[in-house]
Image (cartoon, rainbow, N blue to C red; front, side, top):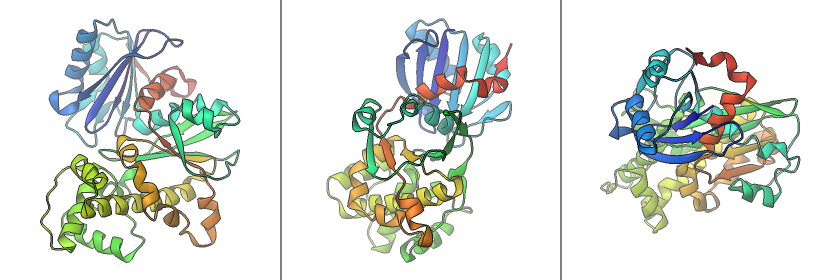
Length: 334
């Protein structure tokens, strides 16, 4: 099979190699997208460095993948599937949404009827943020902020998880408090369209921090999500408040998507930003916001919510997708 798997977001490209469908993913490497002019150059660098012979490609992409031409939502890369296949001399190429891959990365987790058992969660690098009761016969919401906001849904047919791909991070930002309404008004003067990922992403954390600086008449001292995240951990009040506000807005987004998708089996939060800000979930109004759904309060707040710390889960999902009968028609072959 000799499969190259990739999980590519707006900032980082993660690559790995799988000899066949029973092999572990090896030679895992993280590259910065900005260091390469296009995906072909990045892949050629990875293959050459690791001295690999590649026959097939399975790529999870932060953006829509339905057309032959793929444009990344939050970085400068784009590619034509057939051109990339010819350039790499591979036999087949599959491209799917990155949060569809994130969902499929948990295939082994859901093979257990008791997937919420702590030992099983530990094996999959998951921690429980919200206890609850998982309802069989319902769906799973996969979501998380990164360079953008990923949103995906897993449905189960004969206990096999199948992902529904979408671009839920680009719906309108839905404020739930007066503070968030003020934030929306402030952002509306800076961007034409205030999507949810304008407040739930790396740039979203920066936007919220800058808004709080404006509100407090304070000079903005930080310009990146990493800086703000570290400052929040170190006790910087504005940075900490920005992180709290983002996590609370995230709770509203999660609750809205639970209602839209019927995801009462569980929610899994993925992405590096959430993992880095994990302590903020309990140092905010996150759980109160989950319950802020009127007569559907229990429908939402009773759903188990898991936080993933597995940076390579997207690669695992890319491999799962390549072998899944569900995705065979989406492959491009020579």
